[in-house]
Length: 97
Image 1 (cartoon, rainbow, N blue to C red):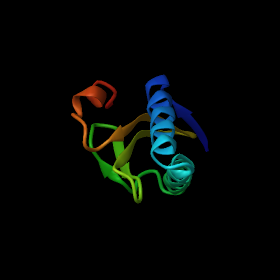
Image 2 (image 1 turned 180 degrees about the vertical axis):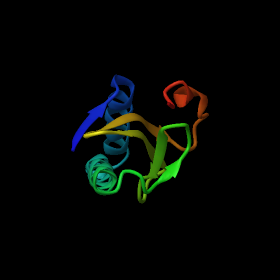
Image 3 (image 1 turned 60 degrees about the vertical axis):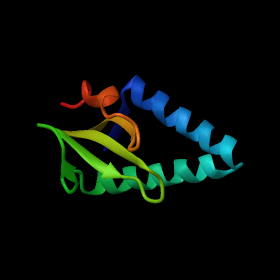
Image 4 (image 1 turned 45 degrees about the vertical axis):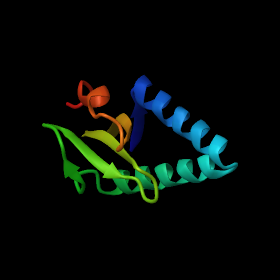
């Protein structure tokens, strides 16, 4: 199954990795591994997680205050946001489908 990211989601992921690596060297890479693990689970069972929009679902990242918002389409997963859960959700609401 193909994985695509909106450019905003890629920027959010990159920013989080840099932030965590700045806080503690290597922590950003742990965050990245958790996100990769989450995406593997999403690929295996895309319809299993909480629906938060008409087509958007949410997967909570283990050990970090982040959620992956995605849309399961035939043959692909579209990551619409890598959302920090302690921020105002308005910054990603326009990307919920």
